[in-house]
Length: 222
Ligand code: SF4
Image (tube, rainbow, N blue to C red; front, side, top):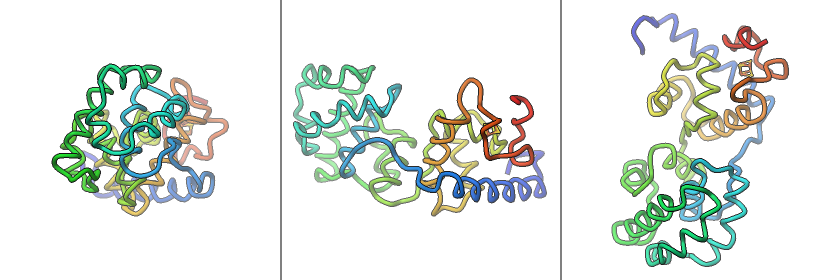
């Protein structure tokens, strides 16, 4: 609990969080990941590619990639130049190719070729931070994970659920406020809301289902 917030403040925040959750469920019960994948390895690769890139673009690139590379060993043995060419249109392709090959080698040698299903193992892989690990846990292993991407960061700050700017601190703030089984779906709901309504730089508060009692930012933008 942050200094100055006090028990009452945190309790009030938790009650507001519960009402926010109910409205998300009412208005976007089916929010889901928009990356196409089958299994943890494909999701890991797609998530690495999605950094600074739209999911639509990633989904255009991955079918050919997934057909060519089927195992962690396949990626580990990839020719870096070829892989760079194959993922070039997703941007930052040098770094992404380097990380995919390095992570795949680690999966191959340290985890018997299977993507591990635990946070501490996932974040030990090249290029995998808590955000990517939570995407994989929540969507490929059914282990609840709060994914703090740019949308979740913006929406949760505007909703007054956190004052932090560091994604890991925001993740832990949200973990305090929302029940664990809901973390994965809530991430998708916040991402969908951030893409369609609570947009950067200017949110469409007039179209939003959170009123002034639930969103302290609403009056700033209306
Ligand atoms: S009221 Fe406005 S700022 Fe608040 S969540 Fe909705 S769109 Fe975002």
